[in-house]
Each structure stands twice: as structure tokens, then as C-alpha cells.
Image 1 (cartoon, rainbow, N blue to C red):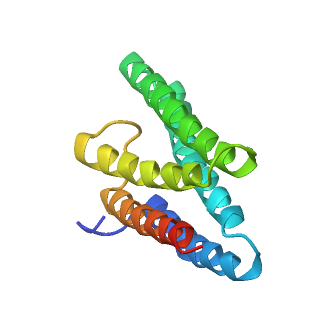
Image 2 (tube, rainbow, N blue to C red; image 1 turned 30 degrees about the vertical axis):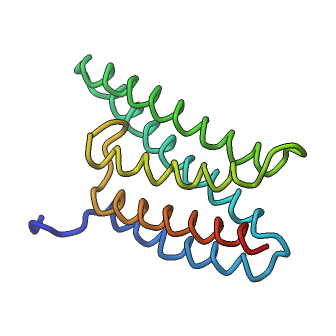
Amino acid sequence: MIPGAIKKDERLTAIGNGIGIPLLMSLHLWVSSPWIPATIAAVAMNLTYIEAALKVKVNAMSATASTDGAKANQFLRTEVTVSMIMIGMALWGYFSATASHMWIIAAILLHGLWDLTKHTCGVGVPFFGWYLSACAIFDVVYAAILFRYVQFR
């Protein structure tokens, strides 16, 4: 492998996001409420990390080292806990009659902060550094745009 070259998993992630993010943004043009695509995005972005943690767990189960299994269990617990909290926040903000849409914005913003935490502190399932940085930037900008929408509505 050439140093600095993008690996196959990274390439698939980049392609998926290269297609998914423009689709998400264009969905805002087709629906009457920005909260539908925002909620879909908040749920989908968190499911990504649960899926990655499950992959690590499955790979560790096929390995013989017990330390890999313990680390995989910790990754899975951490990612599922953090992701489910943020998914719950987004769904609460969308479906609750008493909650504000600010819960959706908070879930997206917290996901960006979780990305930065993963990147700088190494918590949760290991992920590509460039992806975490790009995702954090996208999440913060998207949350800011939604916040401005709430302000000027």
C-alpha cells in the first residue's frame, strides 16, 4: 500500500458520503419541513458508528486474542450508548408534541462533538481521522444552519 493512500473501506465511506450528503441536502428542497431530513440525518449518522462497532465486534469474535474481544465489547457499549442517546434526542425533537426541534439540532451538534472527541481522544471505535474531521465540520455547519432557520422562522 502506498503511504497516504486511501484504503478500500475509506474509499467506500467517502463514496457513500459523497452521494448521501448531496441527497440529504437536496431532500430539503423536496419536503415542506426541514425537520424530516434533519431527523433522518441525525439517526443515520449515529447508526454509522453502531454499524462500525458491530464490525469490530464481529472481527474480534473471529480473532483468538481475548483482549480484542474485550476492547470490541467496550467499543460496542460506548458507541451504542452514545448513539442511542443522540438518536433518542432527534426522535424526541421530531415526534414529541411538547419538545422543541432544538433537540434535533442538539443531536446533530453533539454528533459533531462526539466526532471531535473520537478524533482527539481516541474513544469509541477507531475511525479514519479525515472522516471524523470532515463529519464534525459538516455536523456543526448543518446544526448552525438549522439553528438560524429556527431563529428566522
